[in-house]
Image 1 (cartoon, rainbow, N blue to C red):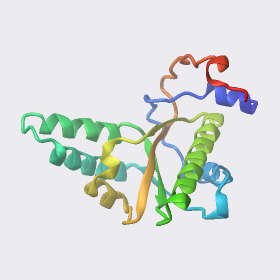
Image 2: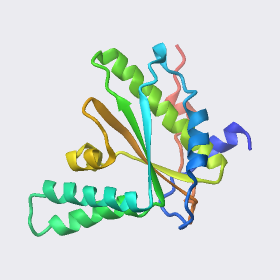
Image 3: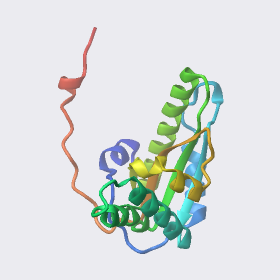
Length: 185
């Protein structure tokens, strides 16, 4: 598959088979993904791969965080269950964590770099038959969730990437024509 084909055919996948994803495959994909552009080579990233029973532990933390945040007592249980389902449904989740540099310019450059790493990872995963869903739901900021996955103060979860073998691949969505988004000066 050519790179342009992979870019055009990759989809956000939200339904997965129960087939586990090997840790070795994730590590192999990350070894290549980290070759993203990174100004000053700060390499501010680290990754947490969650699967099996640890996924349920993380989902319970997400449930607790959502229930604590919900002000309406009648909606607490449903809010907690929605968050639990988000985390417990995929066969695995890869958390992309970034050290937050105190310098705002470096922090922005690092955020762009880790975003490139995540995108590289999703393309490499697609090439290997894996589907991904890059999520940034509010739970990633909750203290309970951060503690459950070992995210430290001064670190930011840039993405919670659901990873698995697709059970269903969505149809492509239209993109704006290049003539609408391209300016020549």
